[in-house]
Length: 365
View 1 (cartoon, rainbow, N blue to C red):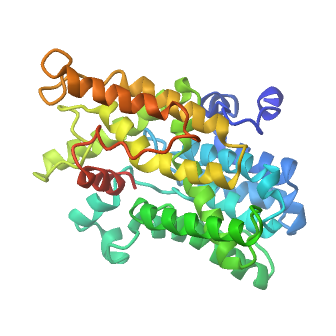
View 2: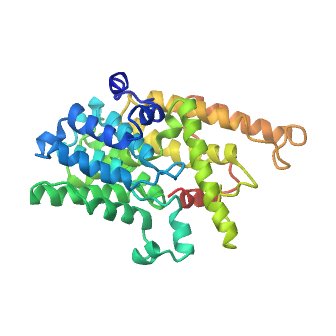
View 3: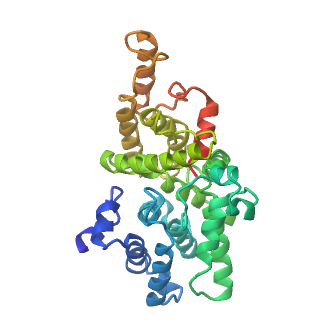
């Protein structure tokens, strides 16, 4: 365990191995190591460590072990990734200790009691959670409500501010908010750097919270920026969870959600599309915000994209034998992404339409 803990500040931390070493308590262990040993935040805010550990055991128990993807290991992974990003000097002095505490806590609890189904599925089936939250950020609201049932103690003023920040951060992980969040972050970062000679200065609470939302959201979809074996392991898990939802949709006579049909798999194409339309634009913006610290992640993201792109099955629409020119155009456009910082292109060739990208965001909640 001590050897793994010594690697907790590295980007390609192996959460699957950590889960085994921690005896299937990755979230409790991760939260304690980061908040107590690494950052001393429990002591700073007079949170009793034994009480906190009991609280995290309750949170971890409310993550569903049967979910292939949305489980306690995913919560620990997002928390650890957030910890790494918030440790970079370019942002380390930007946020208050309470804001950092809120971001790490939000990362840990952001998917608690996730049923392994999307917001859209819950709405389509008139699930009681969808009815309770009026089809609005159903899962995100439920994660927050579950976590705050057991919230650890602080003084009233701190608790109110902490709760407000955590709510804002977790609600921003709703994939339906992805495009608007990305646009707002770009505007804020560019405006700040123009006004302060290229230096990131976030003067207001709203500006700091917006960037923190971007960081937590980036960590939630960061698997594509990790080493290929780690990325593939997470991909297998999320795809299986999608397939399980698709099985239920088929049994209920519903239209199958994108990427949820195990009888018509499109793993390679969906991963390339997810990177192109969702992960890459967000991480490019994060790369500008944290330059040069995210260059390793952007480089790995490109390598992972190339891995799945090279394995997209031939189809009548895009075949090496029947349509070599079109296939070559796809390969050429992919090659342009090798230098992600120098060249920014909007390569839509791997998805049939922008609408398909929109559907992908809705199916990924």
